[in-house]
Length: 177
Image 1 (cartoon, rainbow, N blue to C red):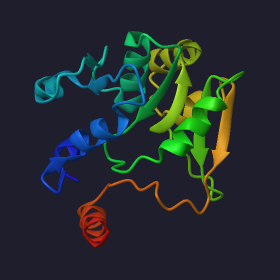
Image 2: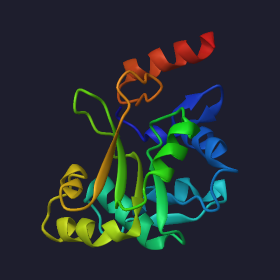
Image 3: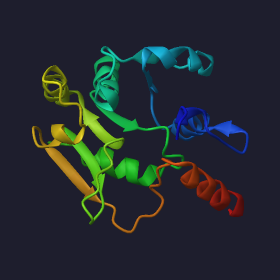
């Protein structure tokens, strides 16, 4: 995208503001994960900001830092570039965490969505081990712990905004709703 996706706007609200609105009322605690150089952008939102404990480790560090800071054992993790949240799927994932460290949606094509997933704090040692070894891909953690995959093949609502074309297409779809 070439810019911070949390600041992208639809209908005069940033993606981050839209995300927070959708989550409020469903969770007791909402934490914002941020690299140190972006933390000042989120202060006005009135939510706790969790800084990455180490810089340059990508989303894996953001998840690990947030899990460590969370008051809850079970946590729903969401990237701000997924502008629409299917709360029924979130509820399903939360209900299926029993006996697992993570519940992760996937498509039949083998695509995983680790930034729209449920994690237990029990996954932290696995994440921290990967970080210590310099391996920052989130997908590497799933083979090291008890992960349940939920097939969402054909579920078109799970839409990431990764390019300007994705943003234009999303805005066009949103305007037609």
